[in-house]
Length: 103
Image 1: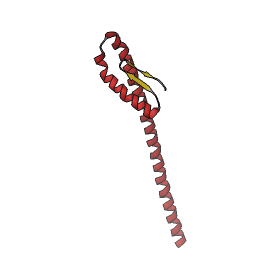
Image 2 (image 1 turned 30 degrees about the horizontal axis):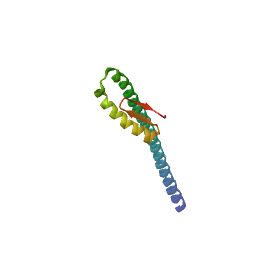
Image 3 (image 1 turned 180 degrees about the vertical axis):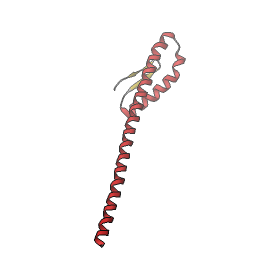
Image 4 (image 1 turned 180 degrees about the horizontal axis):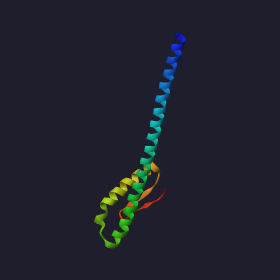
């Protein structure tokens, strides 16, 4: 009888351990997918900000309205730092535009 109770306890402990390990693995996989998605969105957002600044500057130089580009330049400069540090993409942001050097 003792052996039967011991075997039942071991089976219950193993089942509970398996359940919690499965839950933990599922959680870690979901967390990893979310981090990858967030990283991809951040990369695309920053690349779009740099391209938007470059396009705006192309139009701005022709119209000679540089003051309208300041918010876009600030965002492009912040994104240049993020792209360099997280993704290894070198971006040069200047007074008259921006260029993606490496991608």
